Length: 313
Image 1: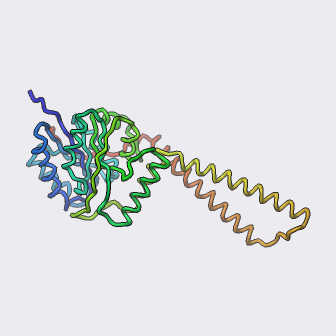
Image 2: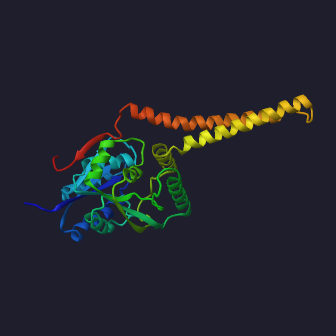
């Protein structure tokens, strides 16, 4: 009878053709470091148009521990992770990117922490070997998350994590779309531990983490976990209304007593333009919330699996 625990590792794949030949051997070496565990590798191809899927299937022929899930199109890394979690059977489940910027060997310490009873073990970044612009965006994003969304959220953020199977079950139950899975994991509130590391520079391939995807993640995170945008709109609206009321009193007073001549359309046009712009921004913020409510109400899945290559295929 096999008494070994199962450790599942979920790896989202998107245009990682140049990374896969290096990532898989390094992940496999974990078996030597963790002989008391059985390991399964769940690669989720998120609609890649390169040879990523082909390389994964070749590796699967060699090693049956490798499971491959092919999505019908590119749904985004968060949806790819959700798909992988649905296929993970492990007593604990790790999530790691395929570009080796996060060291897989850290899983050993993370499992040690999990064995002590922590159901979520976060690998947080104490530093980044990345360009200044990337560090600036990331640091600003996580600062705003801590300030306005999730209190005490890790300073450097995280997307390298180990979860107990109970946490995975809860995430699969929620099935939320347009969200940040990492923030959702933190929001669940399970007992957690943190380990710090320095995120390494990408050595192979080019990142597909574009500005548009970063902006979407930023908006998704705040709409899902914070009421701050709506609260800011309320405050700005009240403040603007008070200023408009005071200005109206000012105009009436001077019209009665004629102390200051009030003339010129430039001022009026400037005020109207400013207020209309403010209203449009507010409507845009409300639209982001409404669109996500509509998207959830449609009950469309966060991802669609084209084909799964597992032990049963």
